[in-house]
Image 1 (cartoon, one colour):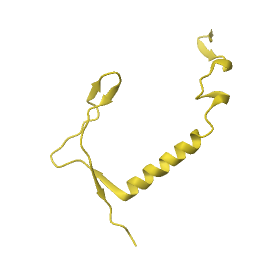
Image 2 (image 1 turned 45 degrees about the vertical axis):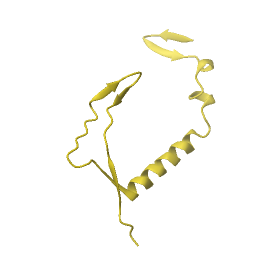
Image 3 (image 1 turned 60 degrees about the horizontal axis):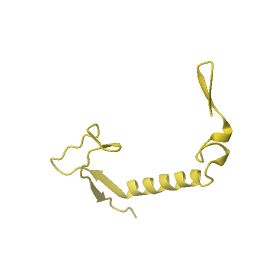
Length: 83
């Protein structure tokens, strides 16, 4: 139930979704840390580049059900392992 008071919106705590408030997912913070660690480890092991002669412009969007960047190719080069 949405209540408007003095041009600000307040939400009744009983109607909050499962992703906020006291019904928040218990594993959400752990999942965020795990994803961050995966991404950092991946980027430490690979260099990311575009194919030669390719241009990627993330500002160009494809609009279907959702708006998303147009697809483009990228190359992952393994970095040399340090002893």
